[in-house]
Amino acid sequence: MKNRRAFLRNAFGLGAGLAAAPTLLASPTQARGERMDVAHLGHSTRLGGGYVSVETPDIPQLPCRMAGGVKEFHLIAEPVKQELIPGKVVNLWGYNGSAPGPTIQVTQGDRVRIIVDNHLPEPTSMHWHGFEIPIEMDGAPGSSQDPIPPGGRFIYEFTLHQAGTFFYHSHMAMQEMMGMIGAFIMHSKENYDPPVDKDFGIILQEFAILPNNPIPNSMNMEFNWLTLNGKSGPATTPLIVRLNDRVRLRFINLGMDHHPIHLHGHTFVVTGTEAGRQPQSTWGSGNTVLVGVAQSRDVEFVANNPGDWMIHCHLPHHMMNQMSSVVGSMTRRGSGMPAGLSMEEGMGILREGNAISEDKGASLGRGMGVGSAREQTTVNGALSTEHAGRSMNSMTGMEHGDMSGMQHEGMQMTTPEVARDANSVPGFPQDAFMEGTAMAMDKMVEKPENYGLRPGWSGFMQGMMTFLRVLPPDMYDKVMALRERQKSKPEPMQDMCSTSTTGSSPIRFI
Image (cartoon, rainbow, N blue to C red; front, top):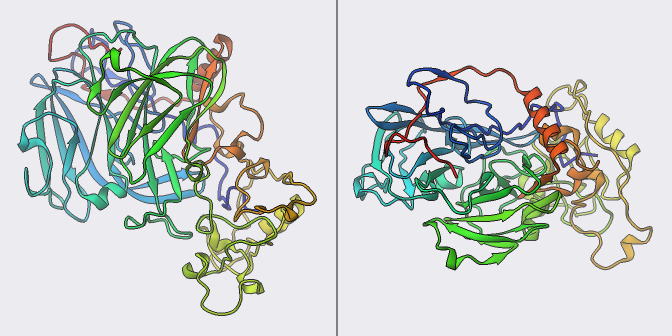
C-alpha cells in the first residue's frame, strides 16, 4: 500500500515542517547593529512592552534593518522547491526560498523600503495589495512601472498610514498561480480593543499538479493540492494556544477558488478585511467565514473550549485534496477511473485496450512521483497489511533505480474498516479511499505541535486543513517545552528593526 499515495524515501522526524514563527523586531533597548537571535523565537513572542507579533506557521519572517529612519526589507523573486507533505516536493516560484514568501511586519506610520531582485527567467513586478501608496509604487507593470527584467532590481519605498492584514504578490497572473504571494502585516499604532494573546496568519493556495510531475500547471483549474501556508494536511502545523487566550486568525486568499473557512468548537466575530480593521458595529458572529479570491479576513474569539479543533475549508474536495485519479490509486473494488502509466490514461483517457485489463490496473503512476512502472500494481480492492507489504517490497529494483534502502518507518499499515457488504451499497466505492487509519502518517509529520494528538489523527487530516489546539496550562507548557528542546541554535542576525519611525515608543503588536 502506498501510504498517503506516496512511497516515501525518508521518514521525517520532529524537525520536519517545524513552524518558523519568530518576531522580527528587537526589544526597544536593543541598539542598531547588535546581534539578535530571531530565527526561532517562540509562538506569538511578547516584546519589550508585552505585545504580540503575528505568527505564520511554516512560513519564515522577513528581517529588516533600519537605514536612515526607514525600515528596509529585501525580497528575491526566485524558483523554490516546496515540500507540500513528506515525499511530495514540487517546483514553485516564491520569494527568498519560500512559497508563500516570508511575512513582513511593520507598524502603521512606518516608512518602508523594499528592495526586490528578480531571479526568475522572465520579467516580474510586485504589487502591494490594498496599499494606499503613490502610483509609482503600485507595481502594476506597463502602467505604473516597467516590469523588472530577469536579473533586474526595483526599489519600492512608501509611508504606510493603514493598519490591518495586507499582502504582496507578483502582478503577473501565471506567476501568482505558481505561488508568488506573502503576508504583509501592518500593526496599528493604537492598541486594538480588546487585545489578543495570540495572532496567526494563514495563506490559502491551490495547485494543479499531475502525477509524476513536480511542476504545477498554472493554466489548469482542476486543483488537486490545497495548502495552508504552503503545506497540505496533515503536514500543516497546528496553532497552539492556551485555554482562555483571546486569538486572532488572519486568512489571506490569492488563488482561483473561494474558501469557506470553518472553525470547530468556537464562535468568532469577523473584525477585519483586506481593507483593514472594521468598526465594531459591523462585527458579525459565526463559525464559518468566506474568504474570497484576493481577500483577507480577520476573525477573533476567546479560546474557552479545550480540545484539538479542526480549522478547514468546508468545500469537501478541498478537505481531501481532491483525491481523484490524478492523485492516488484506487483502494476499493468496484467502479472508478482506471489508471495507466501515461498521463492520458492516468486521467482516464484510454487510447487502446479496456479498462479492466491487467495493464490498466492502478499503478505508481497515480502516486507522488517517485516513479511509474507496471511492476508495481495495486489491486483495486480493500487493502490489507499483507498486500501493503507486498506492494512496498515490489518497489525495489525498479527501472528508476534500486530503492531497497527506502525507509518506511511511520507508515501505519492497518486494515481499512468497511462493512462486509460494502460493495453492495450504492455510492461505494468512491474513486479513492480517502480517509481513515489506513491513510495515517502520524510519524511522518511528527513535530512538537502534534504532541498528544490521538493516534491515527493524520488519516483524517487532508488538504486545506489544520488544528487549533486549545490546551490547558500544563499541556500547553509541555508542548512549548518540546518546541524549545527541538530547536537548534540559529545563526544570529544583525540590524533588526528596533523602533518605529512614528516615535520613540516601542512597537506595539496587539
